[in-house]
Length: 141
Image (cartoon, rainbow, N blue to C red; front, side, top):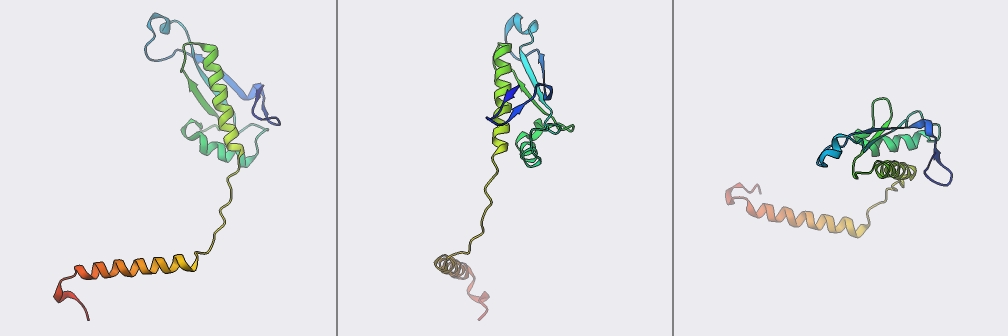
């Protein structure tokens, strides 16, 4: 059971952990011990997450989201299997917490009269500068 918030928990059947050998340096130990963890969360099939949360989670996961609707996290930060497992579970929990927060809707506002005037003044000043660059014979008057 993975606790996300006080009201949300992820069941064990939704999580699958496999341990694989880490890449990179580590001496003889790296060839014998499977310390890296690959955590797979079946997000699409999860009954605990709403459709809107799943949509936001898909966007947050990016390429870690599989075609089957699962999130795959691979962690090989430390040489300890238990620590890598904790890190993977915490990263998944953080990702889900971020997806739970609905973004604020932007309320369109009308530009102020002063900002409109400043924009138009700046535009006419810029037009005068560009008109001043024209050759003497090119001016259409």
